[in-house]
Image 1 (spheres, rainbow, N blue to C red):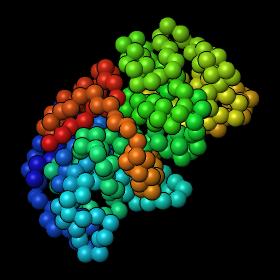
Image 2: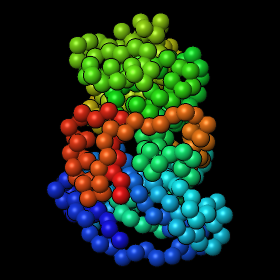
Image 3: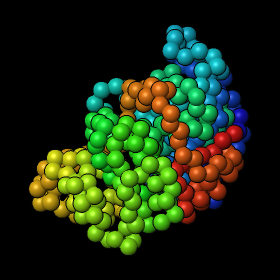
Image 4: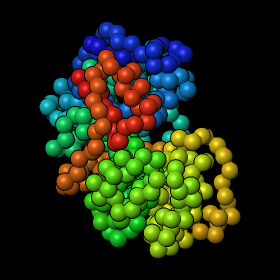
Length: 334
């Protein structure tokens, strides 16, 4: 089978296509999946860029979507021909968070899905949304599930809530779409007027260019008449103070990303005064993904895919991500 591997110490020029042995038939409790798509996440970029070191020869990519080709003894949840998607934490099936590192995450601690075929435990996958193609399905397992967990699982989003989404990357656009579909009002920030216009086309109720309005937290708070109920915080230390300014008293901030750095000062007095809940999160459990898929099966909702690349063009896909011009998700298909 064809696979993409990353030579140590990493870097986009060290991604290359190789031939690997076919993994064969699935054993008890396992399934064989013919993969057809993956989507790019900033965690994947951290691996392939060399900023987050991994083993030499690692197959990257946490997201995988494909078709079940064979099932092992004892597997009843899946059948040959089922469309499936991978789980970010294969061993976190249900309940409260149980994993504090990336040792079991595909494409990081173990080989990922930039390959044609995989044999894995059946519990490492869920069914795909019924009407999704493989490219669309590949976007739900990291970015989509992160947005779903922050808003619905952790935040108990309800109709009439007000949501602030930072930026227009994969998690943020998923959050915009989920929030609008559930009857919330959404504010979106970006440095690009063109992207803000596209966000309005997806239903954004209030948009703000943070380059021209550095103190955007107050503007969002005014729009929300006292502050938003939820913040999708993907920036980290450079944006957190403004997010705290924007949230309502008793609101919820989902700390999802660290695009501006991995450490920095937190305005603790402001956070205390808001009595807001600041919650860090990394994707979600298999049960959360199953619930998300069921919701997508009943909703007229499709992910926004910015651009599609072939598997052998994975490095070019990451270069496109590096440029920061994308809106929504970048995928590779084969």
